[in-house]
Image (cartoon, rainbow, N blue to C red; front, side, top):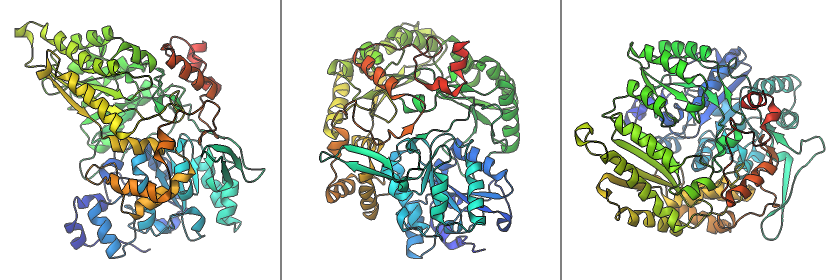
Amino acid sequence: MNKLALSDEILMSVDKPARYIGNEVNMVRKDPGKAAIRFAMCFPDVYEIGMSHLGIQILYDMFNQREDVYCERVYSPWNDLYKIMKEQQIPLFTLETQEPVKQMDFLGITIQYEMCYTNILQILDLSRIPLLSEMRTEEDPLVIGGGPCSYNPEPLADFFDLFYIGEGETQYFPLFDLYKSIQKQGGSRRDFLRAACKIPGIYVPSLYETSYRADGTIVAFTPKYEDVPATVQKEIQMDLTHAVYPRKPLVPFIKATQDRVVLEIQRGCIRGCRFCQAGMIYRPTRERDVQMLKECARDMLEHTGHEEISLSSLSSSDYSQLPELINYLIESKEKGVNISLPSLRIDAFSLDVMSKVQDIRKSSLTFAPEAGSQRLRNVINKGLTEEMILHGAGLAFEGGWQKVKLYFMLGLPTETKEDMREIPRLADQIARRYYEIPKEQRNGKCQITISTSFFIPKPFTPFQWAPMYEKEEYLARARVVNEEMKEQLNRKSLKYNWHEADVTVLEGVFARGDRKLGQVLLKAYQKGCMLDAWSECFDNQKWMEAFHECGVSIDFYNLRERSLDEILPWDFIDCGVSKTYLKREWQRAREEQVTPNCHIQCGGCGAARFQGGVCVEHQN
């Protein structure tokens, strides 16, 4: 074994040295020599971000249940250690054994966010793995990507040997068995990839080719060989109750972003918001049984020492057994357990629950109207009326809250200046509702924080054809909101924050990009672009230089509206929701028509083919 533990001198010279030492509570220890497959599980961001990711916790536990697999972890080093590793030629290593990543059989990278793409190149570079997949040999690990961004893997196609499209619980074990079989037969890397592409959900970019028109649009995306599937269908775990779930999750040494036990109560969402990729690609909605969740909660709290538990879901209020689960957890609260409840709709039940589990004087409530006007909320199919928002706010204020966070998007399809101005007006209406309460019953001054992000069209949403805007236009829209703020009666109670526009522009390019963007990523990394999701590290000028030097136009990817018959870079993936449905929803958006949620009426999205979840319940 070739251990690479950092010296005490190096550890003492970098920020947060506990990021790099491993040995956390519940870390898996195995004899590496007895493992037929060594798998390095990578989250391409710093330790405290990666340790908060539930998907890696699930796969880490699942893989290590196999005696023949040793799954280890690796994260992006911060800039200080990156510099030392480059200068002293220290290769990147796993936390479990402190052995080089290059010695592993697989390097699995979860791809959660477009602004982490250069971090992936940093991981490969520090691991001494050739950045381009075509340059790798039998001595290099197989690099496999997964996660939500793999639903458009094309901007990263040059750097990955294969992608896993969908939920990881179903096909990784067949993939491992195939790898062992090919190894036993003395087969090559190429032999494995040719065979792996036939496993459902596996996409091997090198086995496909893209041809383009003179205007840059795609003529065709085709397999290079007859036995390579033309379509890759997402993998989905329908039975979540009996699926693997970590009862002994890893406990980080330093405070992580989500420093608590995470209990995933369901996957998918019935709501159908037209901007939301997760709400489309994770269909159909599937629940975990409440008894299983109670047992998991008890085991995880016991094995971690955490004092807080968070319910994870795209829309927790839609979980059918929520009252029973909440009551069980509230009883546990007597033992000192705090409960975090994200993704709740603000109604009487939710507020009653939150009053029992939160310190009202310190906590704030979060509403996500997404658009200020009712017209635009209909366009995006948000399913919230102003009456519902004000009623929920009123219940909250009467319950003792006085802090509210409001989340909106600017740049949504069909947005007008009047829609923008409605954002601070709605906030002012909420503040007025607070001051209708008798003064002696109020809990101090009302504090309403408005946050706007800029809309980014994502693959497999009804808005995937929509245009974006230039940086200056986004900032102009934020100024419209800011100016309208000054006109509101309760302006002293309102605070406004907005997202960085230059990051939005780049995120939009890579969200809907094609293989031609690989050269831009490589150039940007060579210029020093890394950790771009961190504002103190992001350098927009270097990115603009990379696009210019590669002759790639940002405007081509962002400013034009796609035609409905255009071949999109991700069209070869079957995400479970039909393109016909997405086109229909795009048209309904333009007509400002609301589509009922899945519990009220089946929208015919195509997810019923999976024979389970909310689709079956609706048919019954």
